[in-house]
Amino acid sequence: MVGHKPTGVRGQRGTCATGLRYARRMRRGILLLFGTLYVGAALIGHAKERGGAMTCECQDACWCKRPGIRLFRWVLPLGHKLR
Ligand SMILES: [Zn+2]
Image (cartoon, rainbow, N blue to C red; front, side):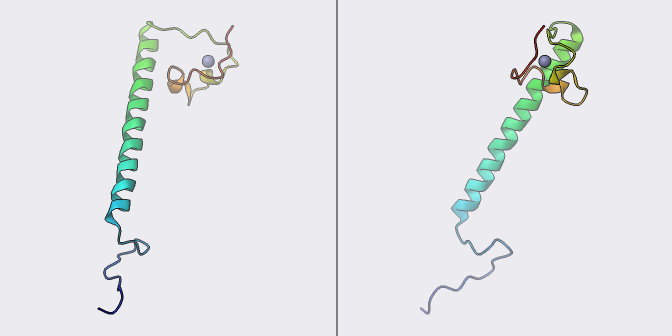
């Protein structure tokens, strides 16, 4: 045995620890899961709002009144400017 030769590294920066790769994949999976749940909750809130089940009590100057991010109004209850 003459030392350890890294063979077949395939651009993974020389880590032969599959556990690390597994952990990274897990973390990505968890992030993806939370992202999906978050967007799902946002879409549900948005749909309820459009259906008239929920109404926003915010001023027009509130961040959630902006077109692009109003989807996240119901899942980010921070920093709202209430009337
Ligand atoms: Zn608001």
